[in-house]
Image (tube, rainbow, N blue to C red; front, top):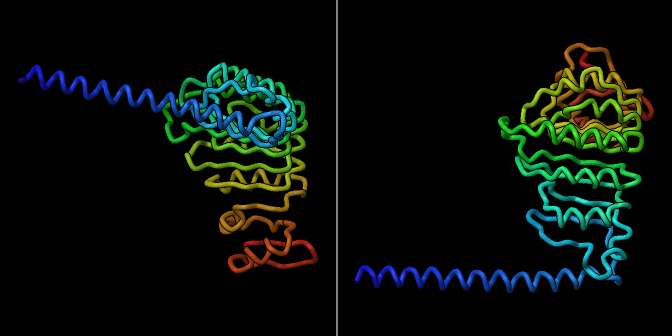
Length: 273
């Protein structure tokens, strides 16, 4: 009786395994047909988001090169396999915006090719998915990644990160217009001290120490027109000298309920006094 029960259980498990494999095969066929339906020589895409665990060599699809010849935005995880990476490197020459998600492990160093190949990379977003785990150390990968990005330092205008860089890459962005920093994971942001970004126009921050922000803002050349963390920044101004910021009317109206401001033409003078 016990043997019979074991055999039935074994058959039951095997039966469902076969069904699962059949379903997986069925889904793969459907997926392939859907991909071919959208990617062909008669369609054009400008933005491409590559999902986690995607395992398809895009460049082998008939008409893929024509389909992605005008692509300007690419978002992907850096733990992709070599086949997927090979496919992406053949279609990413025209990319201007790159969004990379760094994982806790198995990051593919070959992803550097996605940075080296584009001729005019102006917008970069580096998201460290392991930021909530201080025990994870990807310094070697990040260092190579940042050194590769420095090759585009003269033309990068928008940069977004959620962890302090390993290198001095921020100091190379002499033409940077927008900087977005997410300090939610409580890393030290000493890299911002004495940093000068002369053409910076927009600063978006989250959980970045006010003192460091003050130093960064003071080192701009007066082009900074929008600060997302303005209220928190001014609430902690602590007797510093008045500063001048340029806003459009919507920005002024948004903050006027919380901050005492003095309007003077197109400028706003904000002070703690």
